[in-house]
Length: 250
Image (cartoon, rainbow, N blue to C red; front, side):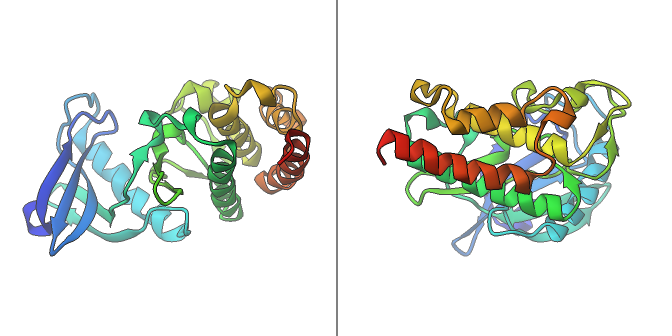
């Protein structure tokens, strides 16, 4: 199945998502392939369910095209499974990247890319389910960040039917742990605040700074206490960054 798309140079076969992933190269061009329909080592579900999710996911990549999102270049049904083929992104998953060592201005630029993309997601009326550090790749040499996984983003409003949804608890809003709760734009706001804390939270010089306070409000347990949209959050965030940088002497 994969060989016709090029020489396989890397394999990821322990995904709990149900996807088998490959890095392939053909005529000097590298691509990233996701395939569902087999049984990865750490997957406990049904291959046919994973294939259905992946086929549904391709619509999200087509609908939410953006410079900060990995580009889907091809998709097709393969036997009982489904395959998505993307541009290859140079860099390292943020989950494995020591971004704490990066200068503050680089981390703020990363956050700008993340927030800008999720403003776009908001305009498309989607909520970012299963977004966390493993959903992003960063190339330090070019200072480029790309979101690489929106497979489980859902149309707003979306009702939590699973009790605990997919994802890393560090990035998840309270409503993602409660069956029957509705996820909406304010869930996206919480996730943006959580992302800011993950990228900046260990920088003690930012404690109680304006951006710290903005991120903290975004992560309010009660929805009504959060910003009402990612755009509203991002607008205030940009003002807070200017003030915080002025205080630091930048």
